[in-house]
Length: 168
Image (cartoon, rainbow, N blue to C red):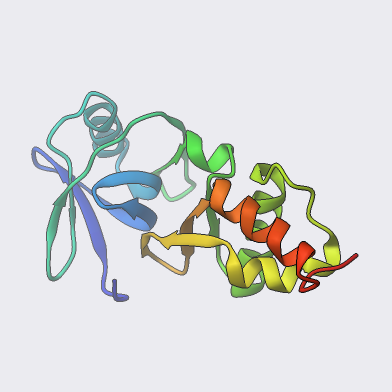
């Protein structure tokens, strides 16, 4: 999505989306700022599967939320900030970062966490090229992806060791 302001709306309530990561219509990360009333109404609608929309210059997307953690904070300017984080981010099944370097560090850590085969540090570059990731749609300066460390990846690592591509 581009850098034009993105908003989130619910029944006349509106807030500015600072950052977001979406997997189709599923909210994986949402950071928004608005009046206390708007933020509270939008949050309540999201967690009860209400008609909440992310509005871009080119689209209007109905949002859905599954398991998420959320926190609000009153800002000095009188507005309220809300952040919602999907449980899959906490479990490192989805990686979100601001920079490519930070993304690679988090992807490496998530792959090590979920791969049943121990991964040697010297294999990092190969692993980052070979691990399967599915990019998420983002708002703001974020890079986000679902990490897929399945049995096929474990087999790929084992074969690479067997064939001498990877060695400790």
